Length: 438
Image 1: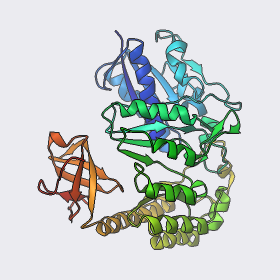
Image 2: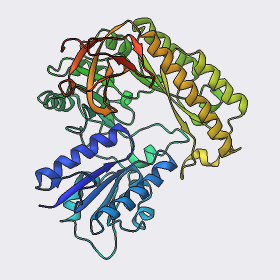
Image 3: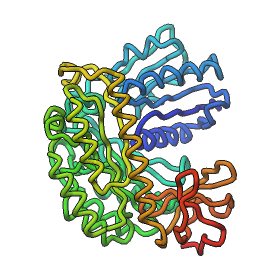
Image 4: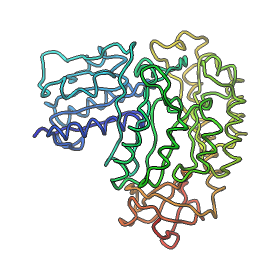
């Protein structure tokens, strides 16, 4: 029985796909092991959102060879689709599979026997691609359920449409069936994931459903305690969706909404499909019906042409906005994107300085959000995440909570009173604060 280990770089969507591919291996008789357990095969699922992700791929390959020098190494994912030849030249790589091939790798690689030259299987994604449904299981306390893939947008900084193709979705009946399968396990929370999940509903080039119809169907699936929406574009987050989440049985009050810039000039250069005024409206609508809703923001600093005035416009915009935390990305040049041709280029030192300023702002935003939740009752899903004798979990609205380690708390939903922010920046609850199982 050959041993296989998996490593995932990048987003929640990648995690859902890696988990599904791992189950395919197990069904074929392979034994899944951890990365350090000297496997016969390594499957590395890559990301290519930033230049740093490319470097991480190379480092993971190097570490794999240190542990198991004779292992067969296959690279899949976005980086594999975008730069198959470059990856095939990394010492130790035996196979590279693109977006259309990764779910067929067991059949395509035929026993994982090393060849004289690396095998490269990355076909053009210009045409229509199949939707491969996926969800993670047994990897984390929560499950990532893939509902959509690809993107029809043409943001000037983004390689994802080149790596994953056009927008396409699972059908609602299939997603609901996957949710029912998950509900039979011990999973308490499901996170809906995709490249552009608000664009859910495209099948074979035609729109067959809407995101609102999907979440209404999932809200009726018994056995799942929580449903969480991952990143959703502001122009696709409709009033009806916000109001449905506010009154739903299972969807939690948490949205992650990409902004990318608080400058309309930069948003236009990025070819985003909204202006900052729409973003303000989305936040106001959410807060009007869910005052304690958590709102996360993606923002990019150092985009070509971003002046100091443009950056300060973004900084001041975010300072005034009632949001809970920021995910800050330092712009990096990506081949085959429009932005790589834009001028003037922002110096790296300036990019890093701006990034540092926004990360500091994010900490202030998170602290303020946590302070606003003090003396609130909440439900925490505790995870198998133990550090220095403390275990952690998240409330419905994504407040991170620390409690003294107790194995009985793992993967349980407990009522708590939020009373204190600890020195580490998380909410702390005592044994007395942890209430009954929900």
